[in-house]
Every structure is written in C-alpha cells, then in structure tokens.
Image (cartoon, rainbow, N blue to C red; front, top):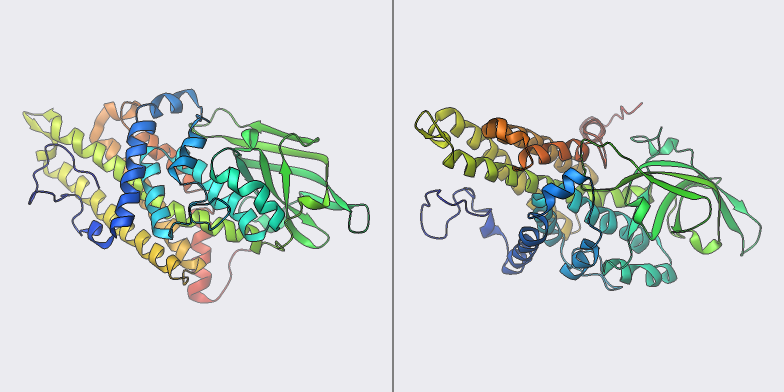
Length: 402
C-alpha cells in the first residue's frame, strides 16, 4: 500500500498501513509487476476516471496500452501471452481496480474469460488466429454466457445452436439472447455458450456476423466506465470452424469463470485500499472542532476497521494466488475469496465515504464510485448467494441450489 503524506512512520521506508508487512511476502519480481501496473494506473486512469465515469464511456485506446503493459491474458502461456504467475496477475488486478472496477473488468473479460476460453478449449487454428492479437490489445473479445432469464443458473440457458447440414462441413444455426455481456458491442469476437442436442458447447462468433445484434445497456448506476450489452442471435449461420472443439458441458464456461473470480478476489481489495487511502488522507487534512478528523476516536475506529479487512483480504488473495501457482487451488476456495473480499470491500468503501461527509458524494473522491462499482462486482461471476451455496454444499455435502 502506498504511503499517505502526513502519516507518521515507525521507521523510514515503513508503510503504516501495511501492519502485517505483506510486502515482505512478495518477491522482487512480484513487487516490480505491482509497481509497474500501479504507475500505469496513476498516470493513465486516475487523472481521467471521474470524467469517464460521469460520461459513461470506456476509453478503447486503453486496450493496446494494456496489451503493452502485459496484463491481457497475463496468466496464459504461449501465443504471445505474457505467461506470468497467478500472484503477479492478482497484483495487477488489484492495482487496476484501485483505479476503477471498469478497467479491471475489461482486463478480466478479455483475458480471464474470452482468451482463457480459446486457450483452454480452442483448436490450434483458433488459438493462432485470435490469441496473439488479443494479448496485444489489437482485438477485443467478449464472453456471452448470462441470459435475461438465466443468470445464476446457466444450465437453463435457452440460446440454442442446431446443426446446419451434415458431414464434416456441417455448420451451425444459432438463435437466442444474452444479457450483461461485457464489451460485446466493441468486440472483434464473441465467445458464445449455447445449448445443443449434445449439451452446452462454445462457439466463436466474429464481429459483423449476420444476425448478431449487440446493444449497450444504458442508464447504469454502477460500472459506468465500462460496457455491458444485450445481444440477440437471429438465425446466425456459423461454419464448422466456429465450434470450440474441446469444450463440452458447463465445465467449459465454469473454468473461465473461476479464472475471473480469482482475479476479483484481488481486484476488490484494490478498490477497498483506494477508498481507505482516500478517507485517511481526507481525515488528516479536514478540520472539525479545531483538529483533524483523524484525531477523533470514532474516525480512528472506522479507519482501523477498514484496515483490518484490507489486510486480511489481501492475505487471503495472496494465499489463493500461491495455491493457484502450486496447481492446488479448488473452486470452493475461489468462492470463499470472491464472497469475502467483495463483501468486505463494499463495506470499506461505504465506511470511507462516511468519513468524507457530504463531499464524499462527488466524483472528486473515489469511495462512492468504488462502492457503486462493487455492487456490480458482487453480482457478476456468481452472486453472494451462489458462492454461499457453493460453500454450503462443500461443508455439508448437500446441494441446496434448487
């Protein structure tokens, strides 16, 4: 965590907000990744994010810059992908979301969802065609799973792909609708999950394919510096090369969702940390009744409670990252991290806003923007309720989804 001007240090170089010395658990390479992404966030996101959020735009010129930064498909190997560790990707997600959830979401949709689907389940030709340019930010991908009536229950999806023709050259005809699909209106390729006579399968649908309509969702109160869309598929004809050959059943999309959920456990702590730091800096400068707000017991209690959850949540994310790098991370562990860290980050952001008083409802300060964004983050890639039931099934052995 970066130092806040004016806060007394125990000794030179110490960060008083890193009470548990979490930085000491990171390697020089991991710290270097974090600092590089933090510098990018400070230079390219912070100066303009209030305007992007107010105007409800995502600056597409960031895509190639994020590619150059090395955060698109950051955890993937080969095909022009950076091939970095899970912890390094997590640290990058945390720094990007300290800027704004919308930017971290772009990186997640591109890398953890769309690129991961192609990397895990695509043919060699599909990987060669799409992944290098996606890693560079030259092409944008989207991941179409959620439907208007099938959010938490993707097994009930009604988007359907039926065979078109017979033999090895047989293609597909795709009909249906998707909702809340990030980047769909600007994507060069859509990863679309559809029901077939053979169960759920994945398809690559290039931009401009006849019968595909992607419409951005407007009037959002959250994730305003981001793009989410409704999509309709009306008798969309696809060739046999569109099918992701190795993806069968819900294991395909769920493997991608787990990648995204892992990144969220880190990212949420970035939003929480930025909210805390904004409140701490404000409390040290704002005078009330003749002394700084930070000098009052009630304010210090709020700051301490925020710091407790940020330190615990960051340790949790780091532990998940070490497990992932060791190849032992399990889905229920990811659910625990996503559920806890987003829930606590939202509480931190709201508490930070309270320290800012009335000034905290303006875009001059970040906490309420983070809190609004986190309402979306707690909903996508599995709601609180879904992750609670995943953990409930794990500890009782009894599924309670239906």
